[in-house]
Amino acid sequence: MVKKLKVVAVSGGLQRPSRTLVLVQELLAALGDALPIDVHLIELGNIGPQFAGALYRSQLPAHVEAEIAAIESADLLIVASPVYRASYTGLFKHLFDFVHHEALTDKPVLLAATGGSDRHALVIDHQLRPLFSFFQARTLPIGVYATEKDFDGYEVSSPALKDRIALAIERAVPQLAQTAGTARETVAA
Image 1 (spheres, rainbow, N blue to C red):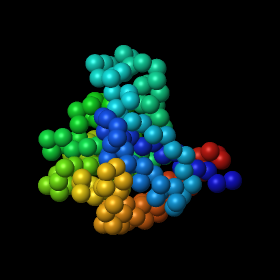
Image 2 (cartoon, helix red, strand yellow; image 1 turned 180 degrees about the horizontal axis):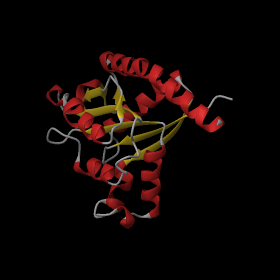
Image 3 (tube, helix red, strand yellow; image 1 turned 180 degrees about the vertical axis):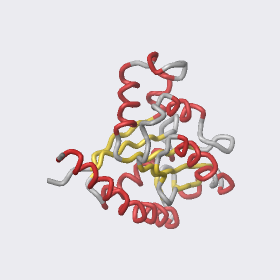
Image 4 (cartoon, rainbow, N blue to C red; image 1 turned 120 degrees about the vertical axis):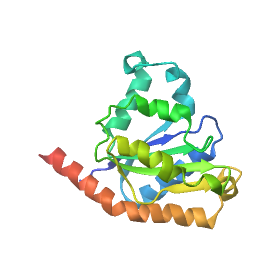
């Protein structure tokens, strides 16, 4: 029996419709075409109001605590944030403030972001990678950045973005297959 990779995707968009959510869904679809996955999607806009004022994890409502636990127990994280003032949003960061500092050690993380223009493309390497380096997570080699011009409304229309998504998944699959194999061995032991 093939074990599905437990993928937790965090869409940092705060409203719907959301290009960030569309990008996450495209990444999940491409990954699902490459590997057997079990997906848990967290939309920050849905849970943000319930944790925005919390200072300690003990103050979180049960359903937000369950989302944090899902992040910590994932085989793979896909994280995406819209760019706000050259970085991920404050609420996105606040969500990860509740994640235990050792829970993501060696966990593969696929990074993505959306922004209004190409000038924010470095957010992946200058903001997201350092955040997940703090957790000692294993950020995957190709991040995916998209701008408004890559979408027609709320659908990916850019061939270049589709190619970037495909490349990110292609480069991730060997590492993820290894992660899935390790998870299977742990379950079998």
